Length: 503
Image (cartoon, rainbow, N blue to C red; front, side, top):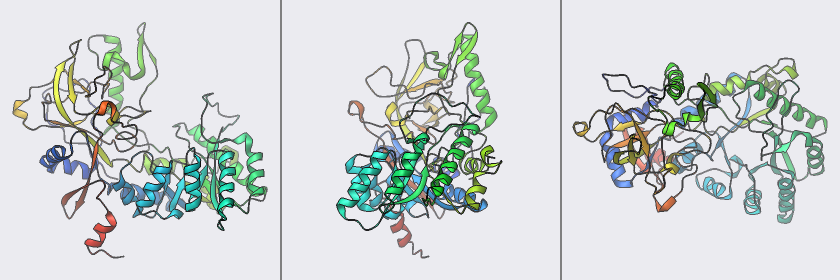
């Protein structure tokens, strides 16, 4: 997918820390051409506000499908609904030839209402009886986290007298290899590979109840070695299942495919180097309270580890998926997973969430005021808080785009700013890294954070201290003009019908 960096105004001096984001052309065009509309929408729906560009997902899905075609793979893509709650995104996904996975009873009810037939739905995650029983009743595919879930699913099926078998994946964990050292960090998902004999025994004993789709796992590590081991372990157990008389349809390798946040690799590398150098020089802090984004100065040496995701990976999205599928597997004489799966007439299932949501949304916050901090840093307070743009496992470090109501009233801002929130707590920091807008944002100006749809804009959002949660507004581009809808009202099936489009 072609993407461009936002237009950056000419500056007399290069800021000491600059990291422009990559922004999809549709989003960039809207921000360039419809700035007054953005201000009007914030006036109407409040701050924070999330702008959703659902049409972008069609391009992302197409890129993944091309990898299937290139590698002669059969199977299905499951869009992961967990990273974002937008209804317009789920409805747009329903118009594509892909399935969807959910991770709660509420999410299952939601996607049924967004146009997904039960045959297109997979239930993942830990399941209570309410969630599991609805999944069984609807006949959706169950990705079992543990043997108790499988037993309960069988019991519920029998109690209901259902004729159809339950489609099930069995989620694996605990991958191991003598070649690769895994960390000792524990995990909560899946059944350990060492318990495979119990899995085989249960599946064989309940072949009249269960339609075994195959093993599943999720491995987001950037380490090629660990990705290879996960593939090898899962394939070995798949073939062992066949030897035990079972009939797995394929293999579900989950997601974890990377996305790109920064527009330029060299800028990203310079950015991290500059942050580290600032810890040694003491003359200017570039991170809040000199937190170093996980790094620290110990006696003139940089220690610690990054507490952010890499913003410029060598391969992202569908390219990352293609790379994973073509890694040589030593346990299979160097053959790739794509070759093995294709030659064995197995199907491949994937569950991309983050990478399909790449570039689908931005978060907009309105400026309340600016002021100096206790230590003299310039703080720009936004009418939003850290829960409105936060993730449990990553920090967004790219420069936000500032939309100014009137640049004439703004002064230059060579000292840089930190963006803070509206909570009555001292830790409501939205950006832990200093950014350097050309001009100091004034009250009423808008600050736009790019690429927040995957896991950032609403993943852990709450109405803490009774503050607002972000309203979602859907933006579409049709015939060289933009239209907007509330997230609840965007229904692409109806829009297609009203335009007179037929197959």
